Amino acid sequence: METGVIESSSREAAALLLQKYDIFVTYLEEQEGQEPFFKGLKKRSCNIF
Image (cartoon, rainbow, N blue to C red):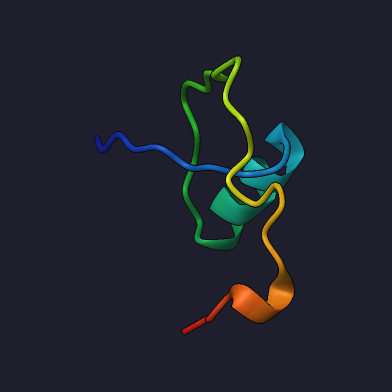
């Protein structure tokens, strides 16, 4: 069994991402009070590899 953290805009987005890679979730915990990373981030300042 492996554990890890995933950051997403919503629970649904996280579930879809995990399903895409055939990862089955047995426990899901939402962290409260954290600002989204992408808030205020502009597309032109991102590099996607």
